[in-house]
Image (tube, rainbow, N blue to C red):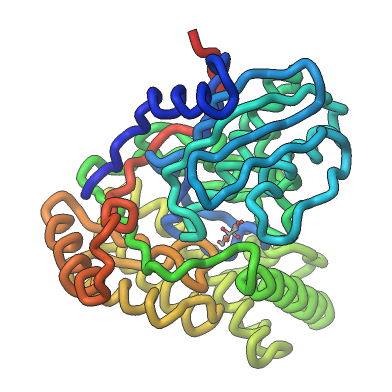
Length: 411
Ligand code: GLA
């Protein structure tokens, strides 16, 4: 129940031979991620603190001499995609996985006039629609492949910004966390990521710490109802910012006019900022603002707690994050709340929903002495009760902080 079994490359090679014919020349891979803390802050230009997972998307491929992309998926639910590279490629219907393949092709064609396609087979062991960023892993793996075969630079930081723009193609107005961590992560490290400009500060995850990932089994489809709810949150955050920034400027709480969340957060302490917000915001807008600002402060604190190897302190911040996501940001669900409670009952130092919410996974912090009990309690109190013990290794595992995406020639 710990790390998932690594891919058998043989299976991928066999699938390539079967679907494409012959042998692939390159392998492009990009991992999923688990966000430790800092949820719904990235699109507000405030920090996040994720790490890359040992689970990834791998594409075995062979470049073509024309602009066709042909990509098969070893998972039966995902039909093969085939399209010509061009700027502004017409998308498939909303929700089709092929849009995550078209997204980087379209963006790279628009920006760099790439033309060369490939044929390949994709295999992934990142759970789908679980808040672990399986879709950004596809975008990154395809993007990296196209960048390499078209000789476009792919330095992780600037490429992550290109891939974040690319993913807007699917209709979710996501932030830049998923692409940045999947491309830029370091083995055994989490990264505090700040935006505009994008920066990654790598923080060593203490050897004793175990981040348990537990899937509720309720899918959080980024492309369906959750997409509208997600985009609405982003709009509300923008509206709340405009109101508070205007108010702060009018009553001269601060000497400067602040137009972004980072500026407001830097200009005054959280207490003063929330008091100013209460002057002009009510209801959901006030709740959204309170979550975003308090979550940013928790990220800063969490980085310090990890440096200090303070498992209790880090856990308390995760609990506070979950409470804020539930009561102020309204993105939790009964299943997420239940898995959080069961993990805590099993001895976790803290637990919270991870990713956008509305379903998907919980991340819980344990150490090497408590991890066994956390896993056992989750199996007994959640998965067995719901008869969800099949494929348990996909639903419940300990995250291994892993390195970012790579592209390699196969010898
Ligand atoms: C999704 C988005 C990210 C981020 C999280 C919430 O995973 O892709 O950019 O906004 O939700 O923190």
